[in-house]
Length: 260
Image (cartoon, rainbow, N blue to C red; front, side, top):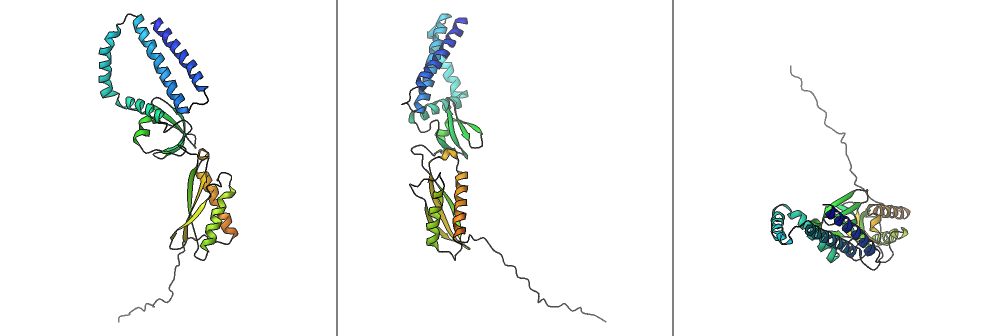
């Protein structure tokens, strides 16, 4: 038992030492670093376990029977665990998701801080940390906002009164986001008419940012404020629904009928 404990402590030390060496390589992608660290850790602990079995006099040939029992248990009780482990390896190999990526999954928006053997850690803007099983990234639709490019396009919708000149609105709205430092100038913002509504001409304004990790709702709010200011400066009305209530005063008088 003491020999087995010493072997595992040695494997742990060598694993940490190897991880430091791997993390010090600058030219290696984060996903490959995680994969190498996991493979190194698994290999060292496996070797330590096998050596420990030999030291205590266990016949390695009997592991065939043990492996069959383990496979039987996996088939019934450990399906999810094995699925998450395999999914984690697939994610690391195809580099579809890596630490630092900004993702959306089933309403959860945040950036990946860690890829583990069983789950991925996703930190949201409000400080919540979600531990999402690796299998969900394989079987569910995932939006990776920073997979191949840091550019992210956002859009907001607004409407103006029919008395407004739509050509001026398109020009002013396209220029409004450019005063914000988070909005990139290339590709430039664009504004389009999308509908003639009941009480307004409806537009959509599209713009691009490069720092989605800094949040999306806040930059949308800043663009709304910039749009509000430029429309007010040019006397362009933003309409809202009106209701007219007519009160009829000419009601017929009710004359009581008197019976003798």
